Image (spheres, rainbow, N blue to C red):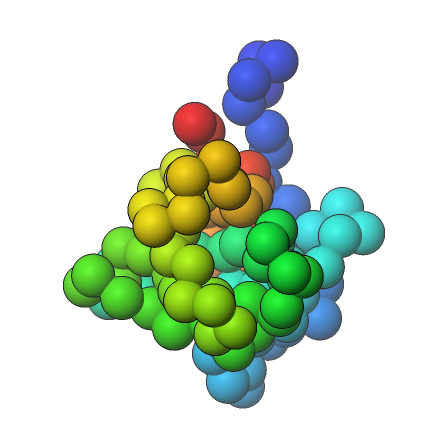
Length: 111
């Protein structure tokens, strides 16, 4: 049973964990997201940086895979909660991602 603040895990469309090259494009509830493979598993973000809408598909994992940096203006966001590190006032949507076989499942990260 889920609560108002907890979302159910949903299979990601458009990505196969066995064959994908990461970062990878995927779809969650009809919205495009980017899935990163980190040292601790997987994490997802919204597809575009909120600053200038650059694709996060070209984003770079930093700080021991705990943050992602936008390739356009090097704005950096925490993968734990989406908060901007060097860009006050900016935030991205982040997703918990888990793997079961070749399927990836996601839900919005609890913030």
